[in-house]
Length: 253
Ligand SMILES: Nc1ncnc2c1ncn2[C@@H]1O[C@H](COP(=O)(O)OP(=O)(O)OP(=O)(O)O)[C@@H](O)[C@H]1O
Picture 1 (tube, protein in one colour):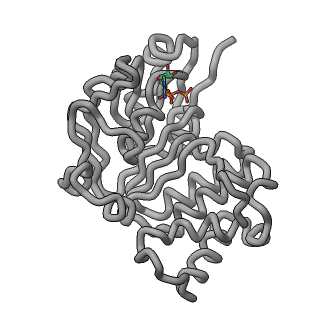
Picture 2: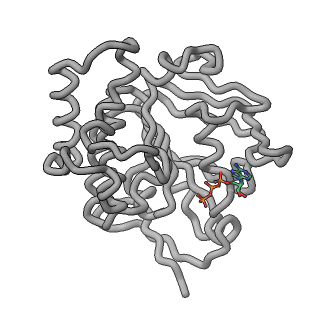
C-alpha cells in the first residue's frame, strides 16, 4: 500500500507548521520520520490520517488522493497509532481493540465471532491478552500503548501510521513492538525519537526540521554526526555495529 505526499503544506491559525513536504513510502517499506521536538512530525502525520487537511499539496494512497475518499475507505487501508490517546468514556480494553474493526462494518452491524477472534489474536500478539477485561483508563502508559497497537493490528490495514509508538515502553517492549510491526511486512510510516531504534528497524528515514524535509535516505546515509549536529544540535559519534551492521550512535556529553 504505497503512500505518497507531494508538496504538502499545513497551516494552523495562519502559522505554517509543515512546508512543502514530499515523501514516499513504497509498498512494504518501513520508513521513519525523525526530527527535533516541534519540527512538525505529528502535524504531518495528522494530515496523513485526516485530522487536518493540507492547505496545499496532495496525499495519495496507491495513487488515489485520500481527500476524495470516504473516511471509511481510507481507514480500511490505513491504521493509526496516535500519541496520547484518551477516551472520553471508560472503555474496556477489548472494546478499544474492537474499534479497529469499525471500518469493516456497516453502522448497525454486530460484532462477529471472526471480529472477536481477531481482537483476541491482536491482544495476544502484543502480549496483553490477560488485560482484555480491564478498564482502559486504569492501565499504565505502556499498557495503553500496546492496546493501541493491538487496535491498529485488529484493523488489518496494509498501511500503518504510528506517532512515537514506543515512547512509554521499556526497552524490551520497544524492541518487541518494533520487531513485530516489521515482521508484519506491511507499509509503515512512523515517527521515532530513539534514533538507534530507527537505525535498527527503518529501511529509510526522512528528517524534518522546522516543518521541512532536510534529509532522507537509508539509516547509514542519514544518521551521520553532521546531521545530528545541524538538526538536533548534539555531538555524537556514529559507528557501524559489528553484530547488527547498522549505524550505532553514541551521544557525546
Ligand atoms: N493545534 C495547534 N495549535 C497551535 N500550534 C500547534 C498546534 N499543533 C501543533 N502546533 C505547533 O506546531 C509545531 C509542530 O508541532 P508538532 O506536534 O507537529 O511537532 P513534533 O515534531 O511532533 O514535536 P514532538 O517531537 O515534540 O512531538 C509546534 O510548535 C507546535 O506548538
